[in-house]
Image 1 (cartoon, rainbow, N blue to C red):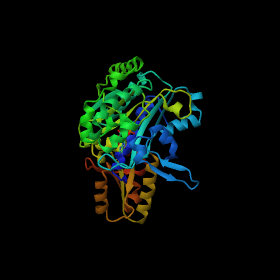
Image 2 (cartoon, rainbow, N blue to C red):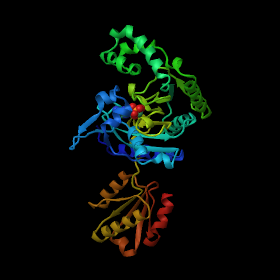
Image 3 (cartoon, rainbow, N blue to C red):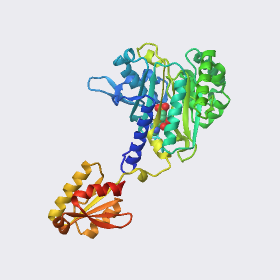
Image 4 (cartoon, rainbow, N blue to C red):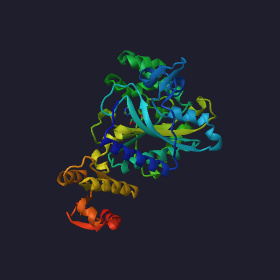
Length: 412
Ligand code: AMP
């Protein structure tokens, strides 16, 4: 779990700001749900036999003996809120986004943390896979706007409830003769959730997975058509993508097309999946709602920040104006002037510790301000402010009443 300090916080703010703009331009609106939910919500939605539920959740017994869990992801809470507030009755197509911390007790490493931040979107009530493709294009566009260019879009379909049993059987038939070569986790997965083996990172399992049957050979005609529609829409949107028939996600609720956006550059290593999501048409119903098609994604803010080429300092907005003052009356005047200018919308700094003009100018220089205002006893008496343009070094007295107009010109 990390502390976030300046200048990094400026880079984070930029990501969150641009993401909000992009999501809202596609008609998504913000929700905020609690950080904790009752544990069964996550067990039922993410799936009992997933790593997240089996070993990564922060689960506590509350004082009333109920079991609560710090959210490991955002979709379950969103669906809970959707149903609790009867949103679909009023709004059959609902598009939401969220932003906030998630908690998974994973093995921490670069790009993987126990408290991490996700921003994500969910769209409810649309079965057409064009909206899935639109979400991929939206995430792709967001990354481009953040300066991330090296991106791979990987897609697959995990099929619906009609396809899954046959594929499950095919996987069991394939892996069972190799049981002894599987890692202990995958030996367990073979019985409980064989699809999860496809996601195992252990070398021995990966070698076996390479020869495993492909889900795409087990999809029903309807699922195949849905996947083809998804890909055609991606093409129409100009999003280049690759199919990886071995792609699965760590959460069980997906039912159709799924996708991952990976960084090709940078040094995130195996943690290079910047964002991922897919269709989950059964979840709303499984959590007690009406049958409702749904699709969404989430991206990890830390990974995106680590992949953006510009350093954090580039996102910091320093002061535009620095006010330098010496003497008791000038310092109070400067205090008031700074306050007024901030009211006018400028970013203004001054040094409350005072000191000589020389030392204050040094700090003004360091602050990066474009303009320095100088106020001393002489300036106060003459009713003028010395305005210094830091770019040119030019310095001239300006009547206090005209100071703002001069600033507008200098800072434009
Ligand atoms: P998921 O919710 O597992 O589908 O993950 C979606 C995205 O969240 C991933 O692609 C990562 O960018 C990010 N993410 C997931 N788990 C972590 C973690 N432990 N630390 C940092 N980012 C994560």
